[in-house]
Image 1 (cartoon, rainbow, N blue to C red):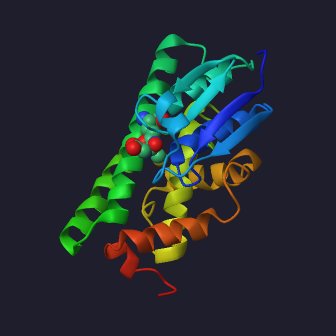
Image 2 (image 1 turned 45 degrees about the vertical axis):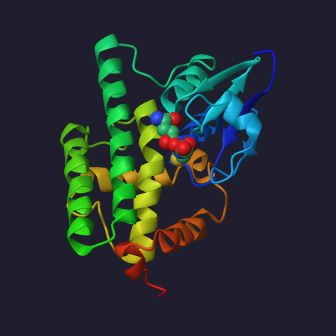
Amino acid sequence: MQSKLELVSFKLCPFVQRAVIVLKQKGVDFDITYIDLNDPPEWFKAISPLGQVPILKADGEVLFESAVIQEFVDEITPPSLHPQDPLIKAKHRAWMSFSSEIIFAAHGVVTAKEEGEFEQKQVAVKEKLARLEGVHSGGDYFAGDQLHLIDTTIAPLFMRLDFIKQLCGIDLLLGLPKCKHWSEVLLAMPAVQESVVPDLMEMYRMMIVKMDGILATKLNDG
Ligand SMILES: N[C@@H](CCC(=O)N[C@@H](CS)C(=O)NCC(=O)O)C(=O)O
């Protein structure tokens, strides 16, 4: 890499956080530029094909999509956090993609405006997490005792589920012991803890308030 990597971020974004975790875990020096997605700057609109973060600028090129960015950072900093075996690697990639669906489902819990929908969205998250529970190794990480990209990919979701638990008393990992342990291990990792701004939980609380859904009525500080 000729130039320093530059990540374009939105502080609350779990997809950007995936990239930051890999960058930190691999000890890569990088710059981070925060934008306001509610009022994105023109330069960002010009370079982001979908108007989304994360964007990674590398040697004059622009990369988008968190999975692609994670894999790129992983490949330029061997040894890889992906399994070697093509079939196992493909399986990990499939579950990485699946974890994005859980992030969207969890956002549905935050935005649900009436009780029936709120219950339904929680069930949708739990059903998807139960699928993950079914394929998890039962060790510290997805595939045993070794960290992979599937682990760095899921960590931002677990952080948000932990916020929901702390702020609203709703434990979406209840009854899923493997996922619960997995979450605890990942959230204790320095690269995960250092991947967000210090006041992210408060920002997340403010986002719940702003969404003004059923979840906002469950906030334990009123
Ligand atoms: N598939 C994308 C999803 C990224 C994404 O949804 N980013 C959100 C912020 S968390 C975004 O930029 N939203 C703005 C928009 O869609 O207009 C990835 O994995 O990078």
